[in-house]
Image (cartoon, rainbow, N blue to C red; front, side):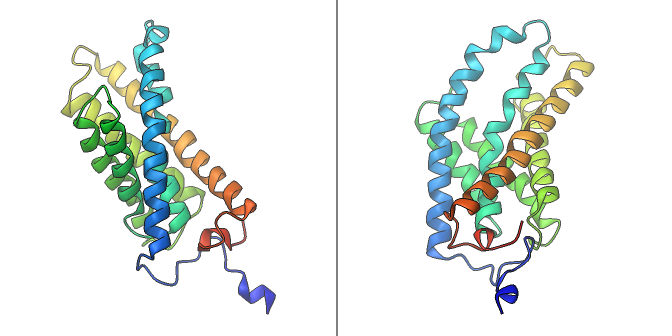
Length: 204
């Protein structure tokens, strides 16, 4: 009986309907990371000079901005969690005075939507490392596209530098948001903090 009560780590949730606890926890994650985003914005600004020799490498710091888009769906396992958490975080960051103003919200919306694809590709039935890294990489790729081709923050860069920038963003988000998000989820589950979620009651 005990063995039957333990669901596999990639089991689909019993329902895709959002519970109150899902909404509250995802919103709290979004708000908390919005504050983290604001602090990370300051770090990004003060470290700019350190990458003068090769500016695209600055994107290796990017991953923190994509964490909510991976962590939230890993925890609550509901369609829309990546979009919801990343959007809330971006709104909070903008309200706290992001250097990028209202465009921060556009980033949150599109990065969250891209993050959804990593889980949607598996019909929201798998929540393993593969899905976490894929979600992070897609969200990171979206961020790089926005930086380079929509808002054109670096119009004078060569094609080589642009490719290096995209690769740096994707690597950073894959490691920090993907693997980091999975590690953080496992740590929270082990602590018992996720007992209200399937992610806290599954074998790892």
